[in-house]
Image 1 (cartoon, rainbow, N blue to C red):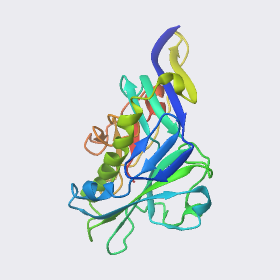
Image 2 (cartoon, rainbow, N blue to C red; image 1 turned 90 degrees about the vertical axis):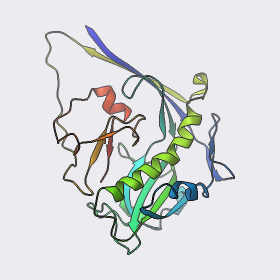
Image 3 (cartoon, rainbow, N blue to C red; image 1 turned 45 degrees about the vertical axis):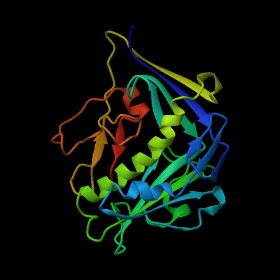
Length: 251
């Protein structure tokens, strides 16, 4: 039997998320969110008119949401690159990225996901939060007319990635012995046995439908490459790369 990459995921469960004067997460499961950081992030992106950061608690799902562009787990590489080494991730909390332009046009609204939040998320599925999870809403308003070209949605994802990176940098320093859960994924290959190949079709039509691969962080934007820029060529990823968040949907 031959072995491939080995991925260790350490999970830290978040007990509480509150507003505070700084964006901070601790190894004992406490998190504070400072909404005013949105101003400094917005200043970097000329296509963004406004960013609003809010905490959404489990009993607050009966509210309107703009298009759900992504549901992002907070994960970071501690050792190695995406797909191997050690990853720290938070459970019990997700960042939900939503977007609209200032004329009211929903951004990347292929699935018509704007509406009442409780009805627009398939709760408890792979890649989606539980109804009991805490959500950090990162809601972006683009300047009018910028929703239909790649630079607009990319600015939204880039801005949200800057926000997420604040917490990721702190998570890198978490004590590995204090994790809530630990999962080890060892890839193995047996000579002579057939391998299973899964073909996954992803968005890459252009404009507001895109997919990024190979980001610096799990499910991250920075460092990733667009499948459009790669000429829509087929790309092989390992099971551990996919499991660790090598792919980021941009639609």
